[in-house]
Length: 262
Image 1 (cartoon, rainbow, N blue to C red):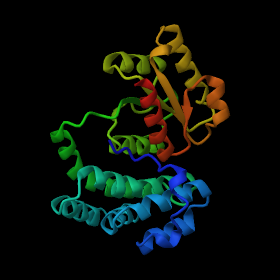
Image 2 (spheres, rainbow, N blue to C red; image 1 turned 135 degrees about the vertical axis):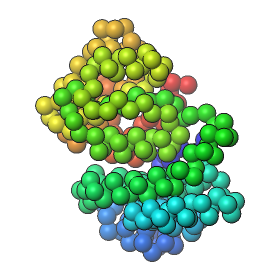
Image 3 (cartoon, helix red, strand yellow; image 1 turned 180 degrees about the horizontal axis):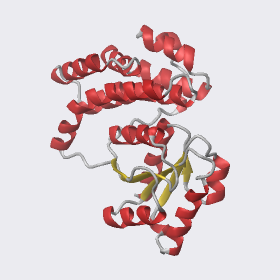
Image 4 (cartoon, one colour; image 1 turned 30 degrees about the vertical axis):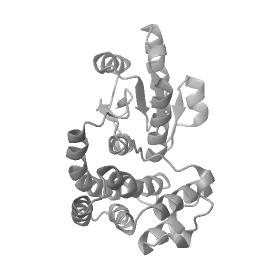
């Protein structure tokens, strides 16, 4: 199953920025992606994609939802598989959007416009995946913790996870520990994603993990955490199983945890 995860670094060094045939994507990577590992991963992702897939990715990044709609439909009718369009077009575009949002190169309105473009493509992809009977990559419970009403970052992660074939149960915002526990028990999920955008609500992540310990459910669940004020150190201190600082890392982490679950 294609997942949207990053390509191993060992295969990246042969690809160069100038190998990206789509002018817009090449300029976007050159201008906005400053971390060397992320730049290498995106260069490899885009150079491995066909010109049609690069065009779809560019459509997502530039928030041209009508174009993405038309290009996705055309790609599917001319023989490109749904998984290829999803991975090498739609998710590849949102990978760059996630980085730009994290680095504050774009803001909430722009992210929502890009998300609309991705959804325009996914409406063609999802029925094909359902009809093919492809099993979900995994099942994830997602929620912003108690006391916190922010959800843009969480929603971007959810969209990326669903695009990577995860089944996601979204608990919304202001999610109590009991809400998380009830959702895990109801849906049988073994991955929980928690988001916090306020330093004052970050401790509620730890309280949620403690509630799972008290309910004797901690061994059944793996926790991934994120949000603007959250750090790897804080994640380690609270006992989370993983941390990601953007939607791309969220998908990679969920894949890793899902693989560990067997």
